[in-house]
Every structure is written in structure tokens, then in C-alpha cells.
Image 1: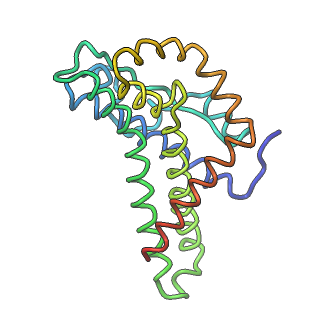
Image 2: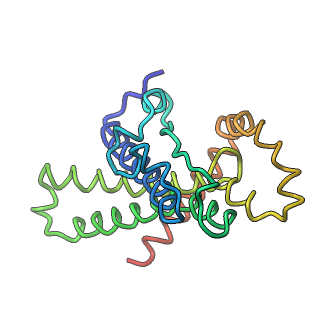
Length: 209
């Protein structure tokens, strides 16, 4: 069923910007630890056209969630500790989303503090709502990607923190990751975990202002 919401424009903009920053974060982190694979593939950019997946984008309209093209890196090109570097690369995407959420929150609150006449203009309303959605969606994206289920970033972080013996034993778990992730997403548990955690982070943010 097609999502017909007057807020869809804000959701789509926030989605495109959020995923572009997320994948750019992975590409930049990989480049910083010595792997230029993503750079050579043109992924070291905030241009959404090189990051978005057409099917993943269309799914947003129909289902309210989607995905981008994952950034590829080559562990053989990484300088230094490979496992720590992979953790850094995986963590960079969610951290970029949290950074974007922080900036969006600051912009949104700044607009809210303007005089009522300026705030009530059409442009003011648009900017306020846009950055509100940007903040909410980027927090949700960060939380979602930190869930420790393959192929999400949270799994890469957890997997490479494991002792070597456990790391090897759990590698086969990745074959079932997409099935487990899909079940998690369509179950009430997935919705509850993501929405509750997102609201907790947002409430903690607003308590500081």
C-alpha cells in the first residue's frame, strides 16, 4: 500500500540525506585506515545519487523504510589492526547519523526560538518540520544500524569484538542474517525496540534544552 502522507516529502528528504551521510561515513572511515576502495568507486562523497539504491528508495514510499548501496572495503588494504579498523568503519555510519541528528536538533531549536511572526511563515514552518524529521529519522537510523544482526553495522562491531574462537564459530550466522533481520523488522518486537529507543534518545536530547 502506498504511503500517502502530507509529511512524505520530509520523510523522503530526511531518508536521502541520512543514508547519504551514513554511507559517506563508512567510506571516509575506510579511507582513513588506508583502504581507498570506496574512494576509487566514487563513494567518498555526500552526493546521494552514488549512494542510493533505486529499489531501497522505492520501498520507503511503500513501506516506510529502505536501504542504500553498501560501501565496500578491502580488509587487505587496511593499515594497522584490521579488526579494530573494521569496527571503526562500521561505527562511522551510525555516528554520522547521530552527528546529523545533533545538527538538525540545533537548527530546529534555533528556529523554535525565533519570534512567532518569523516562525509562523511558510518557510519557517517548512524548515522546522524538515529538521524535526531529519533529527528523528537519523536517530532511528543510527539505532537500527547498531542492532547486532547481520548485515547491520551492529553485527560487524559485535562480531569483531569477539574472541577469535567465538568469532570463527559465529561467522556462519551471517548466512541467516537477512532472514532474521526481516523477521525482526516485521515483528512487534522490532518496532518496539527501535521506536522506544529512538524516543528515549530524543527525550534525553530535549531535556538538555
